[in-house]
Image (cartoon, rainbow, N blue to C red; front, top):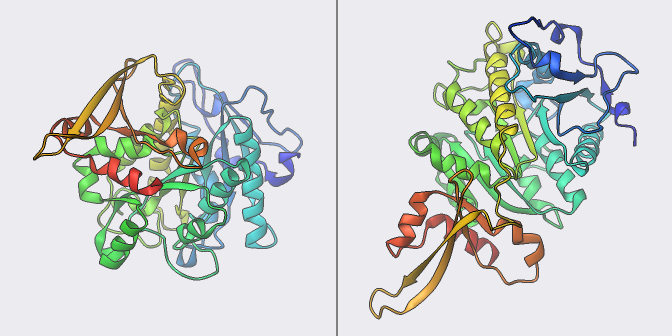
Length: 395
């Protein structure tokens, strides 16, 4: 399949980036689809960027289809984060004749890129495009974890796909390839107790904004567990990101978004990150586009510092700690939990047992990213909450 058939070149306004002896820019080290007939080669590529100019499911946020080139305008002026930096930009995937046509095209493109082990940065458009990204994993037959950085759960009703119900459509897919979902930074007054309860019943992991802001180490484990991260710019407060139709005075600070993006970049497991719902019509002096560009910069920096220390296949480079949990009365051993600490990065994982029929599909998710605090909790003879959620999910 010729991927170039889906794309249009990047607009000239995004290509005005400088380069001198003192500052080699991201733009000057990216193979950009800038002219018809000059589509970038994917040979040897490990990181690709695509824009999706579609806001068909965005309701009041019409106009966010113009986001990709506005973000590029700031991204490509930034200094390259590492000397070995190299990336391809495939241009803008334009909306099809119908919303379903667009989703199909996104899925096809994502599938072909991931089939070549290329990590993809998606510039939306609306967050409903997350469904199309998920379907690419479905085509690959790969069971995945999704992390959503969002102030809301996006699990609304309705048959028509929108940015507020894309997660419902993911959950309803049959057969289903979603193993685990986490929402990072939800705000209770946007969700309500019933939705929070529903997410808990689905064994999804949800963390309030305040909890994450006070414990970014926990956020790192959630992002590290994900194959795919979906970022709604509405998760960032309006003062830091005014380019959104329905923003809030509360949310992540810009620095926190960048930190989350770097967590995603350095994670060996992650293969897709998307930035959605940015609307240039509401932006002030490009402030939001500039922030997203910075977040992508941090993602790229993390990507080129990956340590290949996900202990799925090779456990030789890890220290293993086995914690026995006992009955408080009799002292009998109830269970054992194995923890792994990387000798390269000092990061922690814990093993969740599963012996069901889908063991082969689930195996890579049974080593759950955790923190030293989770190990300490087990050492106090307490089962870590994260371990319990994973265990309940599969058993």
